Image (cartoon, rainbow over all chains, first blue to last red; front, side, top):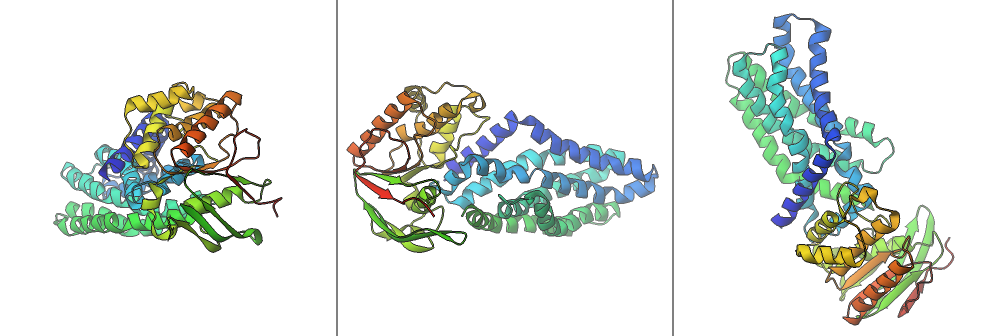
Length: 222
Length: 202
């Protein structure tokens, strides 16, 4: 069973490696969106410091969503998805592996870049750790929830826009907790509560979303 | 082994076929014939469990396939219209991943040998022709030990040599007691045990 998970993750990473531009666009998107705000709002340090957590998190949200469309679409188009449905491993495991690969490619780099972005907002260096940790816990949830949406909108015309409308409202709790934790820490309070809740959201999403994704895929494939 | 009982398929408001019943036994080669749009692909998708019939039931060794899922999936190979090969991978990498998904661990030499026998060059699939892609997908049959093969238009885009190669592969599967269900509208010079004709289509 785990061999299947490993080989699906390896395959998706290999595909991402051969299509580096796709991965690069989503990351560059994150950097550009997050950099537009200081330019648009002006260099008022207090204001920038105040909006930093929220803006960085929203940019992360949008960037993670940008790459969701490709999560299943390519496999659907060339027939690999049919083979996954007919595979020897439960579909839930396969989609879990695909979500994990999506996160490794589109979520994990954000965690690494975020402190660099925070530099533009003059965020206190003490907060970098909390920001990175909140993204580390929150972005996998985004990948998992997003995968449900991607599975539901598979093969639909105008699926991309529908996907955004479907998934963004579901991202709201993660956004509130993630940005909230950094703001708390900025105000000199303990961000543990928010971070623990983010962790709980991650556990819940990891436990239940594979089933939801698998069910949605079966519906889309009929 | 495989049994279709009173199968009915609906597309939109049209009924493609109704009351279709047949049995496939060990060592049999079943050809699904019919005009374009008569429901050949739909029938194969129903048989492998990707789609559900609007009426009737598919049984594998006496049990409805709906309840068997992975246990049934392990015993079958389905090669659909889309060849399930990735443009960015090489044929070998593609074959390896489809074997892994099917729960087989096949040695690297066996994979290379299968691809060589079908004459697939080891280039990224993007650079291959349609016929070569089809061969890359069909290489899966050479390394498979599944007892049931469901092939949707396996002969399409193949040249004469490819067709006779595939005929040989199918005959071998039948000889070792496997079963094959395939669709085609070409004459390919292989004797089918049985033909299910879906007619002229709706």
